[in-house]
Length: 125
Image 1 (cartoon, rainbow, N blue to C red):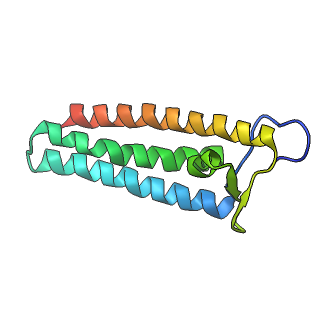
Image 2: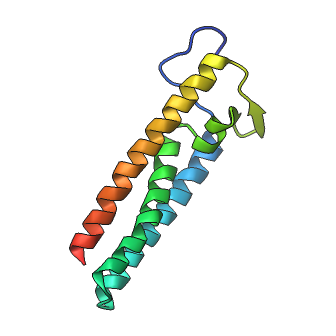
């Protein structure tokens, strides 16, 4: 967590329980994506249907990277945090800016992971 003054290399806007929740939700979404790919392969469905796993992989990656970066993208966009005691405003402008940058990294990493996993699933079918 940040203190008054100059921002450190990283800030967080979610506490341990929030991170654990996002990690579990992310793993559930990713597992659902794997299930979609497995069903397409097992039932010999058209290969293009495996692309339906993409949004699930993206959701899974968002959850994973939010937990890892300790940054909820939705809260960062609204300038808020939840350190397990409920939502509150992030008052420091530098911290809000840092959280927004971290949120953009979460989105970018999740997009790359989702595209990669979706392509892999498509190739494996």
